[in-house]
Length: 363
Image (cartoon, rainbow, N blue to C red; front, side, top):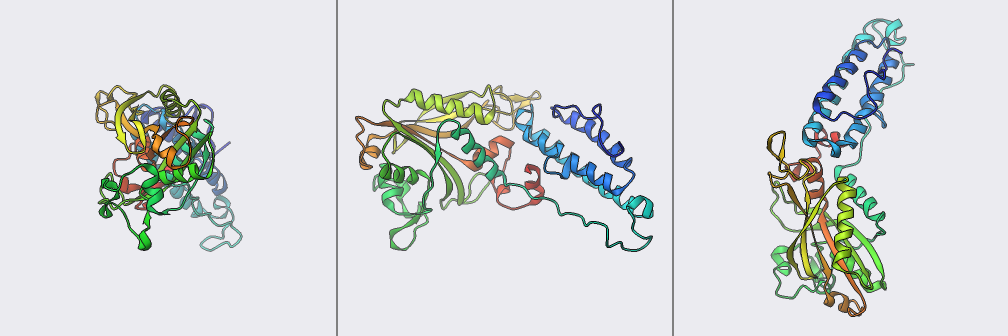
């Protein structure tokens, strides 16, 4: 059928390299030039780039399995732009070819019976995409979503998390303070405190949300960003449960074969505490991509992903639970950082500048 692709032109599996994307583009452009009328041209565009179930969107969904996600992302962006430009050019040619080719418009005039062009469909923001995927992965591990206020009091933002009065995190210069002794929460951990105060273990919750810190905006920092924190409390919960849960999360989020490692760290609300790294999804942990140093991980083969640890006994005790009976683990990560590592985004500001040329590649 004119204007559609043949099985020979489009394999069932998504392209794995930019070269395969270019070969697919050649076939699509040839099909665009061969479209005999405007309706078949629009059907072709919907199949490849503009429809909700277009192939180009499906290819973007499979980016994490590519050898070089950043290069593939650029190639898929170029593919979409080239197809859209070719469709527009062919449509103008058809509209200037008379009523038999363009779909019935009188020569040199306007046909009010021709359907209008639908505006380009929007899509979910990359932060929303990552947040929903994180929620889905942990839902499969038995976690439920919990939320809390963004305006907090010191009792939940600091005291309940075992953060002492002289801790630097409580300094007014490190927080957005409000009248009445309130502040904009600097982390999503207060949700954990509120859940522990209102519910009895066992429990497993995931707390995503926006947080605020007066950081100088640069390529890696924003003053308002998103975090997701997890909490699991029950009888006999150990560090082995923490490591097993986060290893399962890493494979669910980054794909089978993702490796994790834990390094000792310190947080007032966990003891012992650790930082968890994940093997770089771009280079598979080798530190190199295409013979060069991997740009995503800087050649280290590992990327720092989150902080974690066993819930401090004082946190449980303050919430009214016996730490001799109940134990648990907690973890937290930045959603923007997870998105940057997923797609090789170098500047966090790209996520909040609302440049549709950038955001459009994640639809």
